[in-house]
Length: 172
Image (cartoon, rainbow, N blue to C red; front, side, top):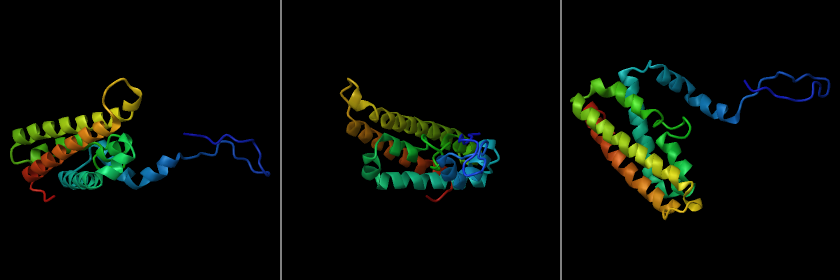
């Protein structure tokens, strides 16, 4: 745990050893119960379906506001993809899909679609990440072209999320 390091006395009060919290801890508190349940594997099928629906909403928001979000850089896109931070419902989506596999009409088709979805997710993540460094590399790519590539991958991801939702009988 982080400790606040200040002189032993300040106006007669002792602060040595007083625990502090990083700013991001305050932001994460809202999702911590959900994340702990998710990470511990205690997620029911209904919880996983709910989480999937929320992830679809996050992807829809990303696509609806892509130009504005991408203008903030690749990390902004990656936040929506759940690969930076834990605030997005896309965080850990591959685990959610594994939890839902047995709920699908056709496990094989669902697994293949999940794998294709994951491939687009990782491609979008990679392109958004590369956009952070394109200006400083000798590659011909630019942040703009890489973020455009990421957007195309997110569009394909969203289509596949619709296919997965159909298999699970979820309205999205």
